[in-house]
Amino acid sequence: MKKLLLFLLLAPAIRLAAQAPHSHAYNRAIQFPDVPGFLTLACDFHQHTVFSDGSVWPNIRVQEALRDSLDAISLTEHLEYQPHKADIPHPDRNRSYEVAKDNARAYGLIVVNGSEITRRMPPGHTNAIFIQDANKLLIEDSVEVFREAKRQGAFTFWNHPNWTAQRPDGIARLTALHLQLIEEGLLDGIEVVNDLTYSDEALQIALEYNLTIMGTSDIHGLVDWQYKVPEGGHRPVTLVFAKERTAEAIKDALMGRRTVVWYNNTLIGREEQLVPLINASLSVSKAAYEGPSSLAIVTIRNTSDVEYVLQSQSGYTFHTGADLLVLHPQAETEIQVKTLEQLKEFDLSFTVLNAVTAPNSHPGIVLHIEIE
Image (cartoon, rainbow, N blue to C red; front, side, top):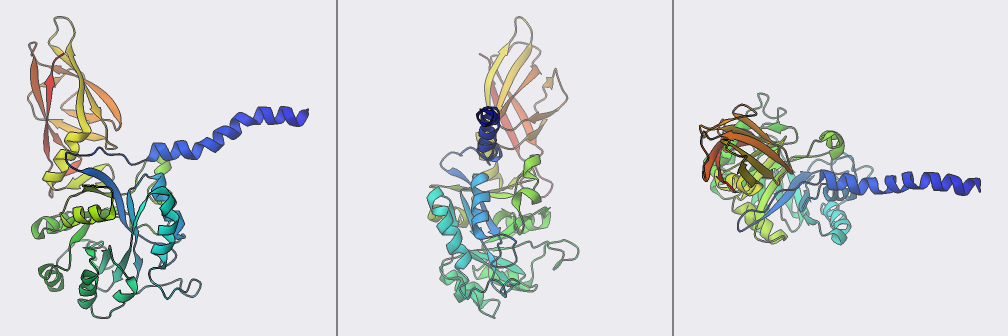
């Protein structure tokens, strides 16, 4: 009888504990709306496991990606740097990919075969993803390895060009070798964000040389610890605007430069991709005057994970705040606009301060308000 009573008392707590991982995974899910003509897919194409210099087995990377609701990942193990080879010898450089792919198959997570070409500067470190056989990339010549990657149909991008181990001042710079790779069509993208760092200079290089803007975790340890996910943080990801949720469509989008990076609650990308994403995130759910007042009560819905920080540019002032407006993620925010007279419709113009289209440049948006 005592055992039965104890079980009845503990049962609710047991059920709550069992449900907690699912609840937590739902709350941390990375969610962005689709944009006109494309799906918005969250991807992390630079990660490591014990098959190079990471600390976890590939199935952990799959589980982390599922908890973050990612659409696609790549485990880009170092080709030339294998510090765990005495404990985990693997002559097949595709092994990490194969293990992850097998673990992800039941969940629909897209796993892309990739490797990190690990060289001194220049050219530094580069990821080749959508490859067919990583073993064939074990080539000494630093240009020929790119040519082999391209023969396999790879998308290549320059990793952490601001890495202080290779750039002590933290400034990303092109070298003659990088220019050669770009001219030959052997380098497609560049990491503007890597792990905890952001590079204005890398963004400028991407814009000037038409490279795909990339953001990755380059995770070696645990995502939750590195990005303080339990405290509300998030890993950096590349948002890819693809026609379908397939590996082929993702590659097509990457080659087409259709990306935006989400990093530390900041969006980074070309204006032609960034503004449609912001516009898809924000909508006016309600707008009305109360009685004879000329204060318009406007409710703005944000269906993205970004906490947008907007600065008013419209000339209207707000009754309950200054010219700065914060729109909380996955929520509605109410503002009171002083229109001086009751209008049937009007526009609110903003600069999005936590969105970047070029160094020191922020995009503008317009919310059209129609009074009910």
